[in-house]
Image (cartoon, rainbow, N blue to C red; front, side, top):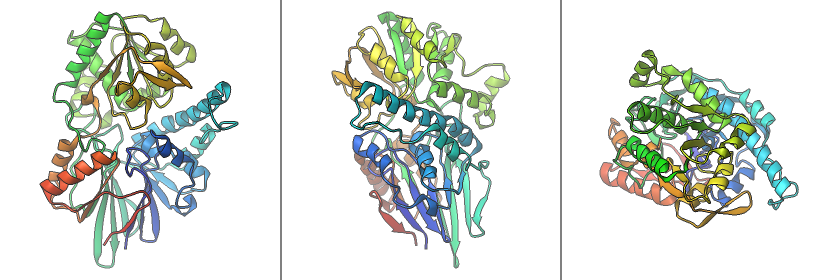
Length: 463
């Protein structure tokens, strides 16, 4: 009988890690890093609850660090099996895991230099070398391709429409005369967003592991692009610089697409657009060679000669000197930099420099997890701690939810309505407690499904 164990993304939107035991195999679906609150981040340093050497294979829903970022440490501590995902996810992980290892080393170095860590010396969670070892275990497959772990255990990836390469992990297991399909949603994408296809509909699901990031919220019905135009134009009128913390994967590329469209429609002036994230620059290159994953409109635009991810004055900043030179811009410019929740990376330096200036604007276009600097800034606090210093928040703070790559609760419910029958049980994960509870209540009330919100390290036998 299959057994499902929840080792992350319980009561939080990070650290996705689920173990499925079936057919004598132990499969790990996602291997994410915990982020946000210190009590969650400290879990990254804990021994994995199951010896990594006991896990036979890893399956990744997509490349975001809260779903993949623990892999280098996981492999360092004994995992030697195969890691499966889509080809685009593999290509993105090659960039993101190396970058994450670099950031871990850099943050430890900075902490030692400035002396703001309690540890002497501060050590990285893992290194670039650890990330490269993990990457050697990747064996990607195509969407829809059958991957047989045993003759009675099949896994398939289906397009989740969240970011490039994102997938629902569809597991079919057979024992005796029974067959059960277990689907891990990863992060459910939004219909109707540019560049990528909409989430695919799934059927015949017996057990569903469902994210709930926006389980208690609806996205603003106003056009995200129109709101972006407003913020840009007001920033220009204010005489300052617009800083946008954005995830390097997905959000940055959609933002570039929208800025280019607004320029061509003459809804905003053409401004210097600085992409100040080596990872985002490399990811944009992956997007440009992954046109098979584009939706129809994006493909047609490309066929007609559009460089869909390139505003007129785009400027890619790879080196540290190029990044520091952006400080010379005093007005009429846009800075896009990672990370999206302001947990690390070059965005910290930009915010430390720009937040005290009332003429500058900081725009959040994605979810800000509990305990992150992004949440601190967004909640209207007078200051935020960056590199051991309290930075006053005087800049104009804006937020647009319409750029989120996560489905809201109406969009999730609409996807669930498409199931041809109710699952035997639906597990709600990857959400803060209120969001998970709200989504569970809505599913029970509107669809009548059996819903469970698992706790950390809780396990279930799947009949």
